[in-house]
Length: 121
Image (tube, one colour):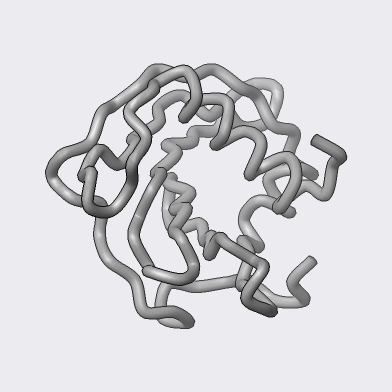
């Protein structure tokens, strides 16, 4: 886990390209989980494939090697903590070769659970 919050200016990043899909998602996180999520993740070695940071109401998930934005998760506060309600997934085939919406919805929560929340996934 990072000791300090990861920010966009700590890595060379690209914005989400124009070809992307917007998918409805529905997952609630507690306030304690959101504290961990907001810390983000900065790779420590070549095996770490993601660079992740939170800014305003969005969680940005980039590939660490290329800096390409693969996912943007929109978040908002709710009665039980925070809810992830929308996912934008990259659909530029030169940046990301997946076009399966279900896979992307599952993968983004795997990344959050495994990398940011430290759960076995």
